[in-house]
Length: 207
Image (cartoon, rainbow, N blue to C red; front, top):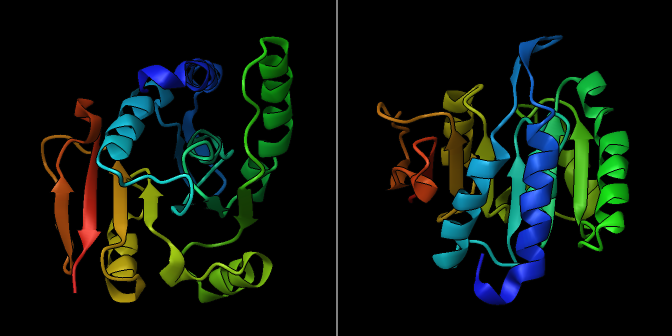
């Protein structure tokens, strides 16, 4: 974070510690569930901010498999709208009580509460009906999304979907790759190693 963002930086560091102490790695009801390292994610955010790829006044972020919404919550401080989709409703049900526990701790330390710009949806990230519901409830369409995100799972199918349906210039952040980077038709590698954490690659849709 920049020097004039000291309170925000302290808040983000606390959120990363809060969720990183609650990591997962097991077979869930609908497939493998594993949590991103939010400490590493803070470096990814900083690089995206430095390159002006995250804008609090305009960026729309969509996590295509948001689990308990931890990445959505972290990104909410840096985007206009933070959207998430999770196919396992039991996992998604963890979002609200965990967020409330976090807010309670943030308030106790006089840190910044999450903005009210997070909307999470139960459903499949590969079904049009899910995006119809998102548009109906938020006014945001698939082509309005600036930054898509996934933690490896179904990354190839998501890459095809973004290449086919997203707007030109839309970004796709894939967490979990290091040395061997996948290629997607219609997407170019913009940053091979975002934040120099050897964990995430940023793609851009090209017409």
